[in-house]
Image (tube, rainbow, N blue to C red; front, side, top):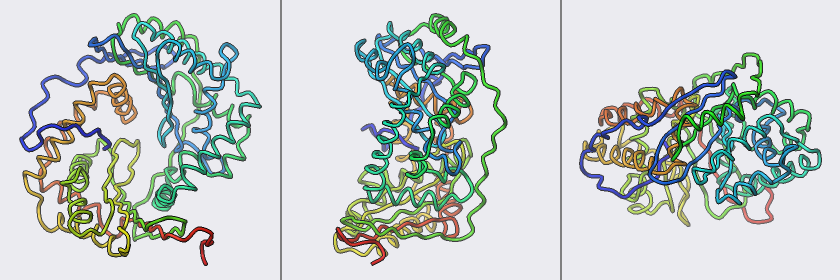
Length: 442
């Protein structure tokens, strides 16, 4: 799981968090299906507003990839009431900040402001949920922006390009196969009418929920949400089915020949997501392998053997469906990438053969718990975690996360490595650097 590292004492057993992380959270639901989750925190006169739509790249299909991300861009291009870019300008004039992001599972829009201005977010977001213009000129212009974004972030970035290739190779049936930003040809082919239909189908109160965290009164907030969103009708949509990814039954391996300075290897294993019981041990395994300079991968590959410039393990368990546990490393100058790949497996095999110590496991658990708890000090992060757990099955699951982490034992970490980090379950990608001007395949 992604977490922010906080420097605290990590060598002593963690102390139980006295209060439930959700004790100050209240939930309401409007008649049109819009859920409102309010997290009260009166430490400072600030608040964060987030609206989460249950639509991401996993809801797309072949030929229409990138729709969710393009729509995110167009949501800032105006309604009849507020013209293009006025949304952000209004928030900024009132001392706030705003942004949005699209993932494989959802699309989220957020603003952080003084708490007495939170009504602005409610009014503006209700307007663009129901009245988006999708003006032809803005639409064509933004398609060009997104295509350039794809070119810069993926096609011109060798390691990002490899990650995209590895994910699309690891997932053959599930729509996690699609990149969030979409394939270049699909972005170019998306029509304005196609995007409007997508907007009408997915941007409705029954397919969204609001999270507000900070110095707010739940009753007053609910009244304002009811006023602005209450009249927006829900959408009758057919049942959508996401194809389950079948179990992988053999190694998959790809090579990407691309202009780059150094070779890079990325290894991906299929793993369960939260709240599967194994996810807690996988979280701890990731921290043992990759959290900080005392981690096994850094010590083994970077510091001691000097095979790699960097080495990492990543496990993000907050996906709606099972995703991936990855190992990656950039070869040091003059080092062979096959040797680096073997060294990554060697570190995993050490855990498979010998139990990690109680001290090492406790240290990893403390790191995870400290980061998770300290993140709650930010209104934005508190709302973000609340929203992510709501997407996973309900915001109340936040309280079960730390309970599960605290129960992890060395035997659980070893069992998770043995169960999931094996040859038949892996997809390997190798970045093979080529010189500028040399075409791939030559």
